Length: 139
Image (cartoon, rainbow, N blue to C red; front, side):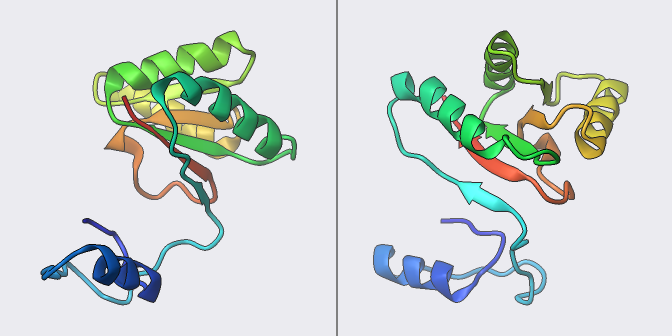
């Protein structure tokens, strides 16, 4: 189990599900998650993912100014999800390690400024993005 932060809720999960775990801290224990970020995790089959993602986007992206960051496990999945979203009319861009640095910078700028309120990313974009919705899509 890995966690970027260690609030009481995460510690309780570790104690409930792990036997004899070892806690290793890198950095400060004072770090906390940004409470302005809504994180949504849905457990579903591979077949259900596209429809569930569309329903979540429809319910959350109605308000102007909202942004959505969707994490994917692989570069290929990031591109596939972005392509699917764009085919459905959603303004989405992808960012991952196979993109040139100039393109990654452009995509991040589009996301930050609202030019593209939906960004699909691998862990290359996992830090410092401000207020976003977070989804995790794996394949």
